[in-house]
Image (cartoon, rainbow, N blue to C red):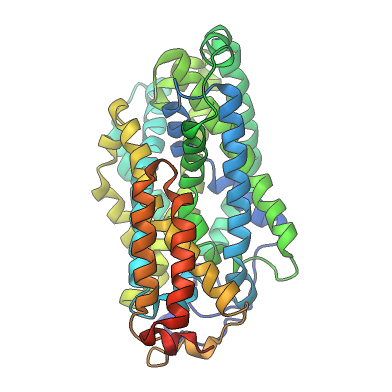
Length: 450
């Protein structure tokens, strides 16, 4: 039996070794502010952002896309700070945080809703990273076999992910400088090569500030709506001395630059070439072989940093909670499940619109859960949680809280009706209804007690 398996869920973790992740409340905080910023920076360099930017060609001009990203990232930063307070204060992960609102059995629903997008993005981004490595091999050695690189790349990520947050901290701290430099280089390379086309197609076009613009803000926000839900998984690693305002600054300074660069690069290149596959884009945009290799290695490395932080930890914690597995086993299972998402289909040109639809759809499910968590922690419980009850499966939070389930379902309906702004549209209906049901629904009485 491992050390991790011998630790009961209610025992406070004072020290955490490499790969020793637990659902227990933890006092051990391994992230200082700079490490936390670097972790989010590396975790936000998502090829999904590139694809969303590509999908806005013909809808928004360059300025409107810039503003849409800025608005989306501002909302993201505030949302991360707000929903991450429970994890930061008490050292608990999302799966435990959700017990007070959904119940022990009910948390399986938000866990499933959060895990599916993570595993899909894991597979999608791994295929992109493998494609980059395959092109590097073809360029330097004349050897090309995407399947060999995909399987090998996935094995590498699984091996790194079992190191847990210690591995994440090490990986992100080393990689952030490389990521920032590569993003700046790619951005100006694109402008240099396609400046005339960008001017004609994006700067001198009217675009719109109407509903499609706000839908654009939702798409960029939607990529991070998964992280807004389980942000406590990360904030529990941040030193307690870092206050809410400083947390917003950290989130903004990590998410905004990465999202701006990737989203605008996707928009500019696709408007100039009609191409949405990032591997094909950069192989045509970069003429120098050495710089091409560096760029492609960046793309591959960025997928590792994003996947391990955003797409392994949340579903791994869900497996730990539901099936009582340890973290290392859960991380391996998540990596294997990513193969089943058929990422080679998702990267096709005709799949770009489908990915945007996928983001809108899962955001419709995540928005109501976010609203319920926030209302539960800030409004109903006044930021005071009873850890004994949160870790007692036979206590008042046993089973399913129907107030949360009903509110979530109503929020989803509103989100699907207003699908262009699904995440926004779901917040008020779900949050208000959850508050009312918690006050008046008889079956919710035991969940009202702190």
